[in-house]
Every structure is written in C-alpha cells, then in structure tokens.
Image (tube, rainbow, N blue to C red; front, side):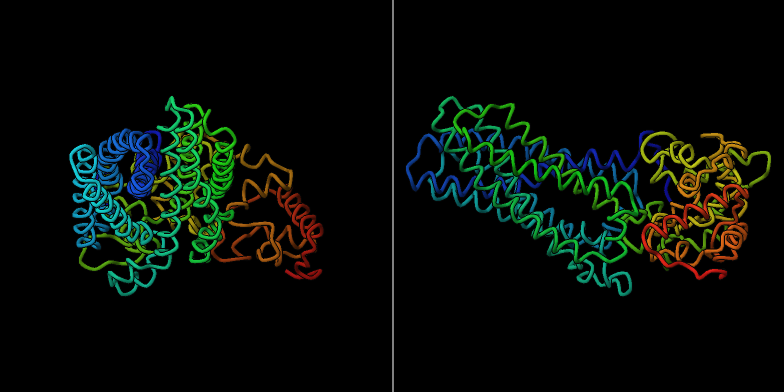
Length: 525
C-alpha cells in the first residue's frame, strides 16, 4: 500500500524463489563444508595423508569460489529482490530484528575473512594455526545460520510475538530449534555432496575412492536423520498451517511430495557411490547435486507456500496489508481498507475515482495492489488458468471475491476494498479470460459442478458442513442450494441452475453413501 508495485511478469514470488533457492543451496554448503574442511584436514594430517591434503587444498579453492563469491552475490540478490517485491515486509524484518541483523553481519565478515585466510594459508601457515582458522570459519558460519534461522522461522511461526512484540519470543519461536536441527543436517549432507564433485575429477582411483567413501559418511547419516527432524518440525507447526500443507494449498502439497521423493533419491544415489567409488564420474556427482538441489528447493517451496498469503504469519499479508490495525507505522489493516476503499488507501495508484466508464481500468489497479504480490494474469499462480478451470463469469467472480478468506482452508486473505471495487476487480478479471453466463452454467455433471463452484472451500469429508448438513431429501436439498446464504450467511450469493443443483445434490449424496457419512436426517434442512 505504501510502496509502488514492481511488476514481475512471470511472478514475483517465483523470482524470489529462483534467487533464494540457489543461495540457500550454497549457504548451507558454506556451513557444512566449513566443518568438512577442517575435520578432513585434521584427519589427513593425523594419518600423514599427503594425497588427501593435496585434494583438500584444491577443494578449498572450489569452496571459497562457490561460497564467498557466488554465495555473497546471490545473498545480495535476495536483498535486492525482496526489497523491491516486498518492501513493507523487508522493512518490518529489519526493524524488528535490527540488532540480530547487525550481529549476523559481524559473523559474516568474520566468516569471509577466515575463509580467505584459510585458503591462502595452506602453504604459509603452521598446520595447527591453519586448522585454527578453519575452526574460526566454521563457528562464524554456523553462528550466522543460527541468527538467520531465527528470522526465517519467525515469518512462519511468530508465536506470541504477534501479541506482545517481544523480540526474543519472535526469535526463539515454535519452529526455531527443529528448523535449526533440520538445516544443520542438510548442511552436513551438502558438504559431502559438493565434495563428490571435486572428487570425481581426480585421476588417482585409490584417492578418489577414499574421498567418495568419506563424502558418503557425511551424506548418508545426515539424510537418515532428516525424517525424525522433519517430524519434529511438522509437529511444531500450528494446526491450520499443517492442514494447508496437507491439501489446502496445491503448491505446498505437490512440493512436499517432491521433497520426500528427491531426498529419497539423493539418499539412494549416495549409497550407489559406494558400489564403485574409484570409478565415479563427474556426470554422476553432478546428478547427485542436481537432485539434492531439487530436494532443497522443494522444501523451501513448502515452507513458503504454507505461510502465504502472509509474509509474517497472522500479522502482515503479502500485499502489505496488516491483519489488524498497527499503530504508528503508517500501515493499513484489511478492515481499514475495506471501509475506505483500496483506491483511496493505496499511495502509488493512478485511479482514485471509480466510475462505470473506467471500471475495468480501476479493476486493473485494484488487481495490481491487492493481488499481484501473489498472482499473475497468465503465468505463475495464473488467474487466467484459474478462471478457465472454474468457468466463472463476471457475476460468479464478484460473488466469490466476497468470500476469499474461506477458500483453500482459509489460506487466502479477505478481499480488501469496497463492494464497488470488488465489482471492478471482477470486471477486470473477466477480460483476462472471458466466460459467458451460459458457459458458467453449462456444467450439469455433479462432480464438475462441485469442482467449479464448491471445491475451493469444501472437501469430501465427514467434517465438512456441506456434506453433513445438507438434507438427504433431494427436493429439499436442491431448494436450499438455490439460496446459499440460507445455509451459511457468509456463503457467496451465487446462483446455480436447477439442473446443476440437482446434479450436485445427487453427487454429494453418492459421496456420503460411498464413504459412510450419515449426513442430515431425511426431511431435515
């Protein structure tokens, strides 16, 4: 509301994900790889393994180039993208944790300095002093992750901070420790994954075999404990967040399956490296790294998806709206914008007066301010695809916009704006993919009617009021569906044709019978 909107055509969230996932894949290597370096050096010196020390020296150069160069550049890229896409959220995170960020930057400076001294000290420092620099690097890198983990987990589970705004309750939030343990295991596994890459180019088969077996000792145990740490993490999530991850948000559901599958494949590939460790090729090591990247990216997609539409859960929406009035920060709550109108509340907007002549243009402005932080017209989280799939005409879109907060297990934010602005947004969305009133009411198959009109808020479940409270008398049930607000006052004022209502009633009754739901008694409403 307080900042201009940066229009990323293919999706603002997707751009952040592209930059952040690559950075996270490298930053976790920066932590685990630092421990890998110093432990391996100590092991090699204790065994007087000069060949392993020679490889480790080359691996250190690879490590510094990847982490200190690409890692630092991609970290700046994250700040650049989130600052433009989510300026309100970025400002909040900086101001809430200003001293934590200052501490993290000190650790980062120490981390980079120690890494460079470790790299250039291979031939110039006493072994004991060289190892000491390695330990300084690892402690600084891990301390940096400890601090950043607090801000990342805070966004999903701020806990009691939402009520009292006490920084330590926000930092040590419900998912802080399980997330830290989970990420530590990932960091250790990635240390071995990256080591496979430089090991695979070794000419000495015996040396390669030793390095591969040593790398597997980091990958396999770390991945083996991830299911337990994942269980701990999941059980610290609020019930509504975990419900969304299990089906309310398709993105979270799909990527949760990808994460499990890809982590399993990474584990299996790591075991396969032990079959012929001395003959492992670069292509195979890159495959292991690529699958691990996919697993890491899938986990991050799940974490981000279950948090949306909030940037800070239960506090700040992705569109820079606060869930409740926030005194003294110049922000807006949903209730304030609904009362005043989004066109009068948003500062960076061209249209202030809504008339019938410029309804579509005003609707475009409303979409840009209210919706574009999460949705695009025809790319990532496309409104065109959604309207095409649901076959909603303008009247149905306007009706559905009135109940956004009930869609997908309550993970959508409520519409912020007046009734006239809701109608204008519906008029604009109709231009993205026009659907006629005839096409909107064409479906007469019960399953299709349910999918197009009901599935956003309802599930085939004994806990769902539609399946439990709808009368088993077909005539009474069909009549009650003609006035949805009579069933529940907050249902959209949407009209279904008689054929659609009858088909929907028959399909719902068939589902109740098939799954053993008792439903409403005969003759009841």
